[in-house]
Length: 599
Ligand SMILES: Cc1ncc(C[n+]2csc(CCOP(=O)(O)OP(=O)(O)O)c2C)c(N)n1
Ligand SMILES: [Mg+2]
Image (cartoon, rainbow, N blue to C red; front, side, top):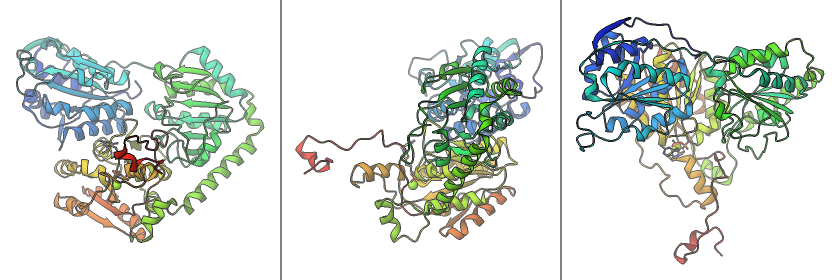
């Protein structure tokens, strides 16, 4: 584990205590300060102890939001995020947030009080089997099968969340919170990860020493390992350009001369053009997920001939998606240090052509910035048509203005949607733990609750969520949490009046036959925000975007949550995946008119 927690004041030695006390003291031993959830009778005996244990219970609007908050909290702090709810429906509301945390590799402990052990199976109130539903979306499931094991199993759920880099479940039949036991509260286990095997590190160093165009692909593992400085040092040693892996724009500082930007959907052309030239790629702390290297901007950029060195803390990820030459099972920070040690003082082939390579890096970056500056709007027929008579802003220009006004140290979460995806080109960070995208699970409604959790863990940092209006309809209820619990954040809601990302598929594949994609008769989201006790501002002019964002971020210091409703045209950027859809084929006469080849 790379983020040692300062060990707090849990009771030491063997004591008589109730199972609730054992549970709460184990939370204390693990440094838990905040728990997200909705109150429920199932765990009331433990909840009663939270205030005296120094644990804040953050009462949310919906358990899914609470689960995402725990995720955001964990991602920004590197510490456990914790959520809890009522047995049955409270727990099933955690399913989506747990799946999202699974694919974000977040150490979230999902506490799931269960129906009473004496009546389980009888079909009583709020009963469902709670282990099967989470079996594929957690790294470990602890079931308290006897109250005497409360502390042991609670502690294990916390240890495994760090050890296995993902959510764990702690399932507790509700009657097991009651009754006396005698136990000792286990201390958290801090397992240090190493750099990887000596032989694979030697092989990797040899490959890098001989490389003429090495490129580093910095992934989320660099962030999770707190290995930012080591990634920078390794890049400097090799004088190698660095790409961010998809949705990890905070894995390498954007102000660094060697930074090239993100690969993948709506990523940086400079990054893609440069990695295409690589003869050796060091994939540092990335599983090389299937969506991370999808062709973009009409480019197949993955260098199929290059030697790939992959470093991942999870051995099962090595070579899973992309063929590799060397797999290193190790911590990204420790592996980078070990490679630096092996390469320092050696003759490196890439130093021979260093000036030419650096000139290429600079030229590609300059060209991409110029292209972005000139890319005021989308240019496909649909977009030109809908934007022509619109009084609203072009999404790309609005995103560029947000980028320019982004406050120092900002944390930004992004949702799933067309405009959020386009924002990938305009999100740059100088410090790790700054970008919290809805990762591979890709659920709409992720960004807003996630940034609320991040703000709880890092109250001094500006917290900003990018959310499409459709996803906002799913998640705006958590404004209540911001107001009630005094957690000031900013949500930037992109009002294009449509479920845009899906509408793009109708445009590209279904000849504009729209079903269920128009969000007509929406309320004014700014007015809704005001009615809920937050600030609400409607922005429809480009010139006002930066001022509005700066004011909203500043208002966080006064405890105010602001919803900025950005009025944008209905134009749509490139889709996420063209590969996953096909033109419609119809055989039945009734449906012939919808066939792509209708004559
Ligand atoms: C929970 C969930 N439901 C449905 C989807 C499918 N989906 C992906 S993107 C999208 C549209 C998002 O619309 P909006 O939030 O308005 O953003 P926009 O695309 O308009 O920018 C939908 C419905 C999803 N990813 N997650
Ligand atoms: Mg929309």
